[in-house]
Image 1 (cartoon, rainbow, N blue to C red):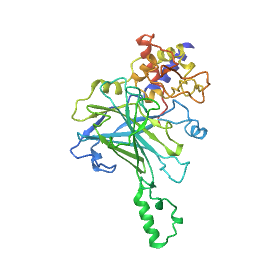
Image 2 (cartoon, rainbow, N blue to C red; image 1 turned 180 degrees about the vertical axis):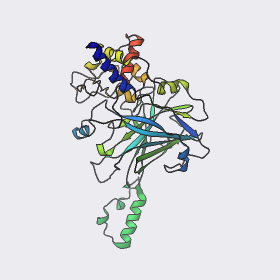
Image 3 (cartoon, rainbow, N blue to C red; image 1 turned 30 degrees about the vertical axis):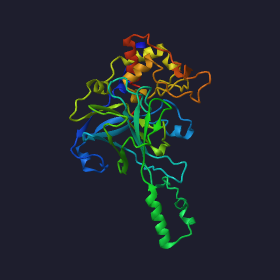
Image 4 (cartoon, one colour; image 1 turned 180 degrees about the horizontal axis):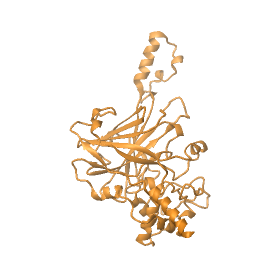
Length: 400
């Protein structure tokens, strides 16, 4: 019986592990200036698209019963990623299926919008460990470009012109005068929701408002879903991209009330700039399958009490004592997982989880720094750690 159970366990883990690491993407070198490239530009026919899987972010459960119900059985999404560069700029296109077109509505407070984000590591000198996906980590900053789908939204834009901020039915004008009023409002309206943030750990996310980051993002919806594009310089005050560029992709679905941490996201993906020498260590880290025995890794994880605080697999009971790990293998690199086991305070996720008991905090404050309450497992031998990492990499949702 024990042998049979071991065989079943092995088959289950093997099936999950069959979802191999994301491929490297080649950013094709073009002679055209990419400053003003659009989603429908003929230049994109030169891009070499690769399939990247975006997994549901489930580390912390939302305090929204309806939203949680909508994503209770969320699956991984396939996205097609392509890139171009002209030696000065990099352009990234993300294609993903989404039958519904959900856009930002200035007159509604209960409408959620589709969107996407592209994240760049601020420093790429070392292959590992890269910053934590989403918000970076101390000493390892990230730059996040966020684009939302939006209709025309009027904003005063600093003009302080209150005459155009009232409902058209309250203007007291008709005919041509009303048409002129509508035209003036339309000319002041914003049709682009694009923001750039820098972050170096949780609660550090800061919007860049001083124009020190130049970028151009856009979203176009068609029968197959969304095409999202982003163009930004290879070098500015926050990044110096060359050789191999690690990026992470996130998408939001407004129809499932997606916002903030309710999204699908990838792990770090390697983009090699054509004509430049790739960073071999970086490419290997981001494209190679994990070494280690996942079956032995699960046994070691249980033996060392990981499931006492974490929800390990989707079928496990929820635990609010620590972040859920049921999709951790989909959006975390092996190096990050290894670091989390050996140095749990290197990246501390937000706490305290408001659903957790007050006596089970995720971290304590020591000398002004957050220190994880997780056990330091640096006493484990390398083989055991490799096995646990291999097991954790199998924890990911099915792909739709």
